[in-house]
Length: 420
Length: 200
Image (cartoon, rainbow over the protein chains, first blue to last red):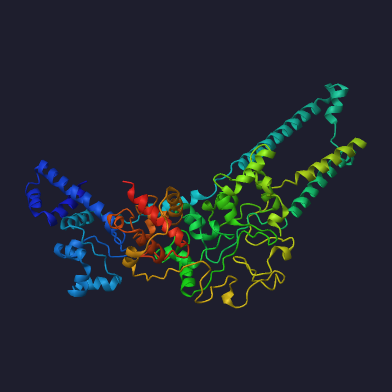
């Protein structure tokens, strides 16, 4: 709180000298101080609005962006010159050749846009706002710890059912051991006084477990062989069925790219990069120029650091295509069109591709078998609303059949729809 | 003993059919491709966009890489040609003021057009410029220097201004011409002018 007050005193010093004199000399008079601060507060607030509306496009207070960081500007340039520059930058740079601004021009290679619309007072309040912003606290270790914590928490949650199962098995084994111990103890106890026991009980105590007899028994052999062949047949069957299925295929890409970061955290729409997905058959792998829309500026990532982006920029500068590894490989014998599904069908990307926005490395979510396609065509109701193409089909369907018009009702299961 | 035979036969059949409706979850996450059933039918012999087999030694039957052409199957357009029905937008990047004053939108503004514009805006713009155009998208925090589309200076700008900036870029923003077609650019420009800038 006291820090803020000191700051506000500084800005007062610059703009309203009478006020500052007043507040410094009568520092003990609380009321006066408050009124001065509130007048200043209004100015800062107005300055903040103006700054956010006009300046943040190129400037930040403590960071170089397109133009220089503005903090401490009043220590570098007198107020009158600031106003003059904001109103007409070209005048100071090209005509008057003011050394400070010419140096800035040479450093940033761009001339600031003129803002003749801002009044002197506007500019003063913007400066007041700039001077009122405290410098950002240096990044403490706790911050970075928080970051890594976030990464850790993003990992799939542990499934405790396995742990419970293991614990149950251990408990059961312990119970079995205790029971065995009990039996041996009791048997030993009874054997010691065998003479007192009846004949039947004697037999029971001296009974021996013959494992060979059990193994040779017909029931045992049949049960085991049936179970064994069932398991073997099922394993063969599953193995044969999964030939050509690439579910969970997650190839390593030439440049590590996190969909979790781009599509998840940064909320970039899928269609921003995969431009073809609403327009044609292919969803498109974006060209490097689309990457450069952001990576012309952003050169360090939170996950893979600088090297990955440096490699990307290298490809861009050398005009060299990046050989991304295709994840979803539909066989050539089947035809698939993205636009038909996304635009006409209105199906979302994640229906087939899964939660891409949580995948650090993209993985094939669906199995892409024909059964999977067919199943969806059987279950999905045609998105016929507001689409005149389907009007007559819908009419025909309603006259012949009950229920919604599914994709299969309009030929979605015809072989030649996809295979030709 | 016949009943044992019957029961085991039933179990066999049941076990086989239980495998039919399989969801393939047993396939682990793998980095390399697995077995293919019939590669000749899986890979296109003709050059296909975004699919290419470059390993001639291991997959001689499916190898389909165009010789030359920088190793790509996708072709660059022949120089000095344009695609059918396409009018290139060849105004210079620096001629923003000319474009803002002279370009006219081919559309009349309707609610449907603005709805389409909204979808396009959310797809191509909002991660930087924010859903309300206040430059508060998620990317803006890292990228910096993003224009607030609701500021007075841009409220005074014409649709042509936005069209030109999307096509050619301005400041830190690069050209989005390869992603957004000309019609889509006009729709976005209308949406920004009619909806985002008139909310207050």
